[in-house]
Image 1 (cartoon, helix red, strand yellow):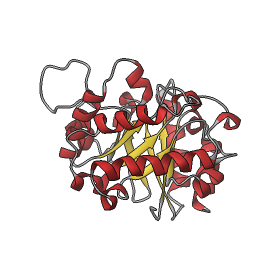
Image 2 (cartoon, one colour; image 1 turned 120 degrees about the vertical axis):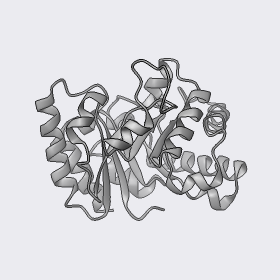
Image 3 (tube, one colour; image 1 turned 180 degrees about the horizontal axis):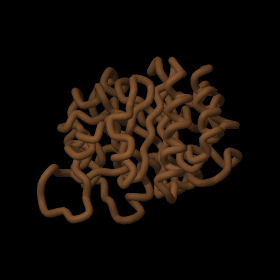
Length: 254
């Protein structure tokens, strides 16, 4: 497993003002910069990326919440990998469940992944089932999603690659309703198995695995210690600076 824990803050469509964004970024960066066992990635909305251009450090990085699959072309409203790289972003979330809910397909995710990798950025590709059935059919759904989303991705691409497992049924709830560390570990093993079948066992161990879905301060340590993942993709909890900093410190202690 990765030596440093990777903690990704997905601000989604928050906060509502530049002033709030500056405060949130500043507090998180100050705290994250003091932790030697954690890499913190902050992913603000596109309008705020320029505020923090090249503000990353070896311990705190800038990321984007989405990207287009080409650097040039007629694509009103889209943002290219080249643009993100130029403002100092080093990570890009691709295929988040909320983007998929708006119509993003596995094929689109695959195209975005290849564009991000070609620009030298690190993708955080999100996968996860909508619901869990007692017959275990969700494993097939997850497997097919992984295979389709990673279509065209080569073995060598996994040297800088992050996979975030986010079960949709657990997103946006309380820590009580998050997956148990044991279930997260089981799914992590399954994801590695799918990758091993697609490539080989060595390649399957390369991507960094994250968990996303109602991760909060109260369950951070348990998930990172027993869940078989090397970090968390954090949504609403990352908007509370003090709470998220507590999560970072908890991760740093593992």
